[in-house]
Image: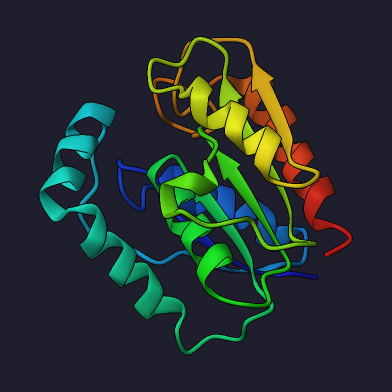
Amino acid sequence: MAEIVLFHHTCGLTDGVRSFAEVLREAGHTVLTPDLFGGRTFTDVHDGVAYAQTLREELLAARAAEIVSAMPHDLVYGGMSMGAARAAEQVIGRPGARGAFFLYGAIAPSWWQAAWPAGVRSQAHVGEVDAFREPEAEREYVAEVPNAQLFVYPGSGHLFAEAGHPDHDEKAARRATERVLAFLAPL
């Protein structure tokens, strides 16, 4: 089973993030859910984005790197929305990643002016009509990340797999969770 570091989205380390981590644990994985916001949570994604912007990308990246610095290198990194960037930074910047999965967004290696490490499998899950969707990043993700899997779900909610959130879509959440669990099984 995999040891996973799961970085939260801009609403913080919510009950929905914890619930998703618990599903992974029930499947036999070890999951760490670092809190990059120091206990702050938000119901509205826009409020969370505004807060994250006050912290700046550099600070969030430094917090994430500090958290994993003492951990083994053979980790799987998961990221939800803003957390996808934190997960990708670890895959690109730390040797030995076993895999990565991204909910609510895809990453573009050019954001870090780097190439995706050979042999590191990944998948991304996005909502079809999500206002935060980044089609350019998705195209680069598929083109530049070897064997990348991109799954697009019908609907307009950003946090479609977030239990308890207004964006939650039960069918899309179930399918995304199944795909993440299948992805993790051989790791």
